Picture (tube, rainbow, N blue to C red):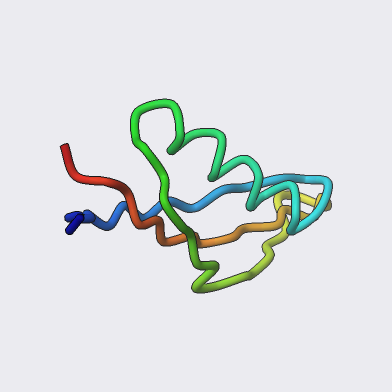
Amino acid sequence: MASTYQYVECVGTSTKSIEDAITTAVETVKKNNKISWFEVTAMRGRLVESDLEYQATVKFGCIAE
């Protein structure tokens, strides 16, 4: 059976770890989409005042409805 997918891209953030930033993105996107797969396309960090923030850009393949 053929399927059609749409891309959804999201940037998750966390003050704990890059893994937590990825999880944040997944949890946010799965609320409104049927995720089939995901790909981490970028990882970066930034300083917010003196605190480190992790950021993960995640591209999702979601089943088109």
